[in-house]
Image (tube, rainbow, N blue to C red; front, top):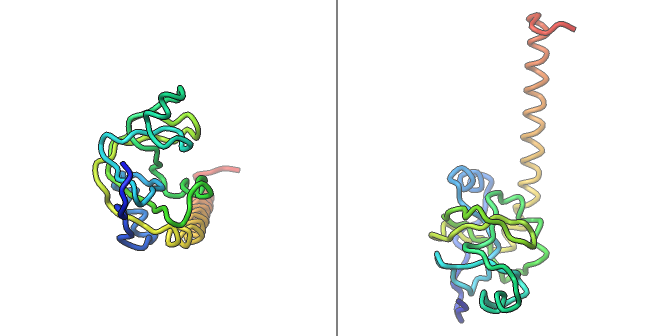
Length: 159
């Protein structure tokens, strides 16, 4: 339902710690028009339509729940579809086990809003997230190499 006023205003600035917390708690992430309120009855349909009814009349599939992701890093795949008036909504919900036809996104029933990030703040955290992923991969690689060398030293691996 379209509202005149802002429904979802920024509640915090994203951090790596918050992102990890939200992922660990099983929350969902989505781009959201800040003027449109989600409910547990919200539906997903192709973005070129204004309403589920309009999409159905055009023969499009309408899915229970809202398209989203359980990994904040995948949001960047769709950021070009949205503008600075949109927000990132982190919400509690339930995976419907259905995916959208257009982008194969998961859909979740909306229960409640957990946090809202501005688009600007989200775009600022993306390079930090990417750097963190690289750092974690390097740590894992170094740890694997150390374990391998230790196993060689202990004779647990024969070359």
